[in-house]
Image (cartoon, rainbow, N blue to C red; front, side, top):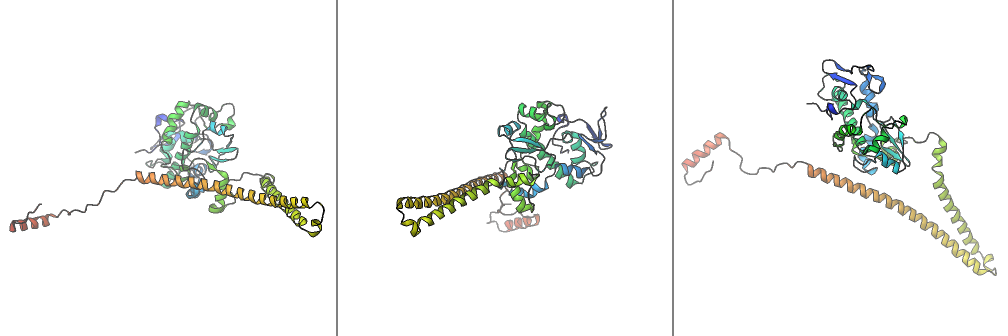
Length: 370
């Protein structure tokens, strides 16, 4: 039985046709060619096409990070802001062809990989990724990994495009550089196609797509710990902008140090015998008290910032743990319950039943039930 995730009548790209006898080819037409739809560099008969698809779709780094992603984001594949909501949150959409940063956000931007044409074709899924296909050049393991990732990738668009306004933004005719979906089809046709992927809800997809949006700053942190990389995604092309981000924290630290050192200097000066004999002794006492107040304020401010950071971190940790336990409880509730063990008398074999019947005939006082 075919495991293509949508019916042929719902496909949004009809540029390909396939058959077990002739394999896959372009549909007849004046624009017919032997390349993958939307990919002029990739030929349909290329023996390394699975490597190309793996590079375009797979997310090995995020799959490796997946056991720790519950510390990074909400454990819900639908945790994705629509395109219009991205604008409300003042995020600019940055187009990327790398599948790893897809739906990864940082401050005022979010990275989104455009939807290619070829996974919208029924023939593409039937020929290359269907496990029952005998003409596919891919090994079964490669088919499964690419198919599961493609399902998760397509399901993300079910949440990015939730309304006609989202569809217009993704299908922008005025700015082709910001276009996220290819082809010419209506919003209703798109919804009919993509709704099948929305119903997956994290099932039959790779570990990365069991999550929605991911925060880049946290991914960069965990990439150093888990992946042994300096960063998950490099966001600065020059040293200047990279070091600018450290100016504000260092300025605050040195400002604290400067105030503290000046306050300590005032305390020491006010406590010296030569100053204590001055006629304006009350001003010396006030200076000493204010210096101690300044030192106490700096310590209190530093402690408050530290407690605030720890509180925010614990709040997110508690939320992540609660979400993790909730999902685990739901998964256990949905798990099939094994039937209870039958602790009664086992059915006797035929020879044992005959022996028991003979005993009952010999000893009529026994009430034997066979």
